[in-house]
Length: 200
Image 1 (cartoon, rainbow, N blue to C red):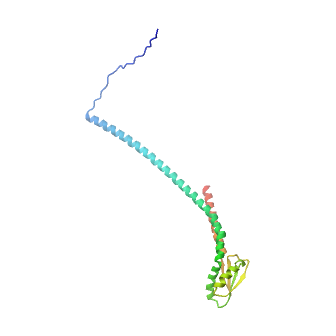
Image 2: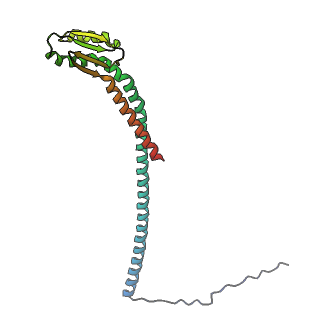
Image 3: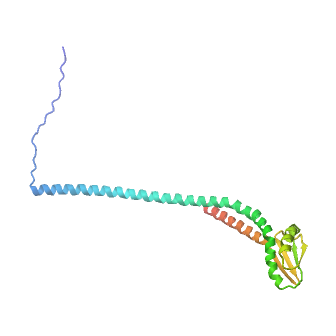
């Protein structure tokens, strides 16, 4: 014989509904209050969202500026690191070569004003023997006064003395090159020191 299942009965004991009646004016006031409440809540949400977005944009901008500054410093340091050997080579190799090529012309530029004060007195050109041939070729062809060439091995390749009577003029491209080399070297030493100080 099948067993019967008894189910619990759920019944609503109070089916009465409480009705609220509002007049037209009261209904409009309720609608207006609901609209204003919703509008205020929406405005507040929009303001909070906007403040969050502005804060995010400020943070992003700050980070981007910091990254940009760091990138600029890295690029600047890289350019200087690349330039250093180039400038050192120019000072060590290019400038001395240019000085050797232009030495004769510079001596000639000093000779021409001297020639105005001389009669036929020869000018002594004292230089390193390495420059003798080049100086002779240049000066003999273009000098307005007679010249006597004297070798002086103790002089640098960029140094020449012009002597006549009791006067002497000195051309010293070696000192100019040394001064430029010293300036380039000092610049990069100071730069490296500043970079190390900034990292510390």
